[in-house]
Amino acid sequence: MNKDVSEKAQRTLHRMRGKAKAIVNDHDELKKLLEKTQKKLENAQKDDSLMEKLVEYLKLISRMLGNYLSGKYNETPWQTIIMLIAGLLYFVAPLDAIPDFIPIGGWLDDATVLVWLGNCFKEDIANYKVWEKANFSN
Image (cartoon, rainbow, N blue to C red):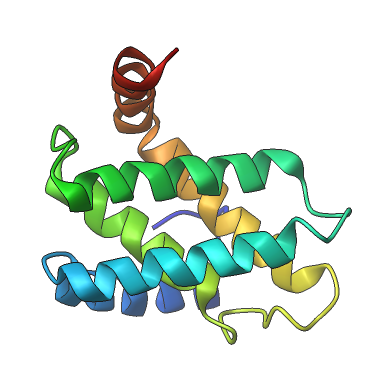
């Protein structure tokens, strides 16, 4: 994959990719994942040490996948959807490469994987942001 992400994180993300393929077309499971992500985000916002940009990025990805789930937005390639779902699965997993209960390291690990995915799919994410602005701006 990429040297910016540890081998253990890569293996875990690869497992999550397999799970993502299993739930990408299962609206109930995808909805549950988005709910778990929202719950973890709410808890994360209470942690002042967590970077605000990470929380905003996760909210963006959650909205993107939510709009994909509802059928409002289907311009993102399937492979991107799979990898973003895998990233959320990695994020909500309590025991990933570095468990979240380990101070700083657990969140840093999640952030590293999510930033890497964001960089890999930045064009698709940018396209979604344009669509979102055009469709939901006041």
